[in-house]
Image (cartoon, rainbow, N blue to C red):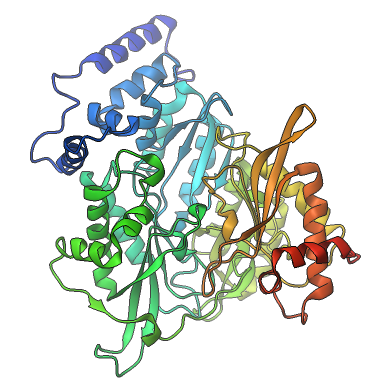
Length: 583
């Protein structure tokens, strides 16, 4: 209302009017109507209560108040320039609004882009929203998504309206819901892909938006579709991952392209998704995803937040029992086939999300733009939108590597497009170190983070590039807390923020892990150096990479392969004697 032009008297009237609306909750408004779609959640809660178990505070909050009946309350808070309190902070996340105090006395708003795809018009519109109602920038997330930050309380409802008017949504982008549905960022344009996954991601996205029963799960839920292309979507780190495979003759089902179903990935808890044995046609993927989520709704733990993820229900039941329960929600019987019967997935390019790459469409290319630790200013957002409009098809694709692609650029326009991107202070190339440098929000914007991950990532890259000439791509992920939004345990070098005691002080530091990877050879990283003060982290990582350059079996050996053929004690010994290679 600050820019509305209302008089002070009108503002006071509206504030009182909206506050009154917020208090007009009919009797029983917190209760779930019998027979309504949401009744499956209250029934699940009732089963835990009947068993003598206590619901966690978040479940009690969902039980007491419908998060999607809070529009008037959000408006009243905005009119009063007031942030939510208590469990209302949690319930606001159903609208994509995160009150991130004490890191910032502000909201963060997370959006939803199925398959990470955003149009130039939408990106330019978000730049305007970021400047007018937020902090003037956006962060690309590790779910191929965007977050707007530094949103004052008074702007919260106006921001939600503006997002909706752009044809976007933040509904269910936080809290206990199915998060942004990711898919191969090069879907439909990739020369090696098996299938275009965009229609599947869009279909599931809109199914979720239009089925109230798919909100308010026991905990958050991640789903990804991998089409076998050159750029990974890390589907094996999701609760449900659909991985495209090719099947030849002679396996009892028609040859063609199918999807395997991976279940229970949560690498922050040290586990990749496991192959379920299911073999699906593309048309079966969305119904199976919904059936799998329905079982989690019915049986996921609502009394212990630490165990309220799909992995733990699978650990308790086993995959066979889980699939049997899911089958009760299906009108067809899925095929089962061992993964060894399928053709292996084509390899993904480690830094394939950066640079110029020919598309499957002759004469066209996609350009991977390097975005330092995923942050874009409003002017850069507008500029990238203009590049996509002028040189491409007006489409931009966000990736789980915190960067973006501009697709459909003709050969003749590559030089001009690259120059336009460079003029924005961005690039289409990156060093082996910076090409897959990922950092979560960090303690400047997240109350859980124990380190300034984005600043530290850039300082680390500066240090390493000045001292090492690395000729093989590497992944370095910095995450601020054990929630592992940056997925440090699937990186070649993963850094988990911690506090380190030095004398009487606690300083920012990191636990250093090595050898993690997703994809064809998934590995959980091993912790090699605990509690390293950040002042010492760049030198310690330099020693690791120096040991790699000095002792790899050949120039083609990756850092991950090098790290994983050594025991940790041996790797430490090599680091102690490593001599840094001059840049």
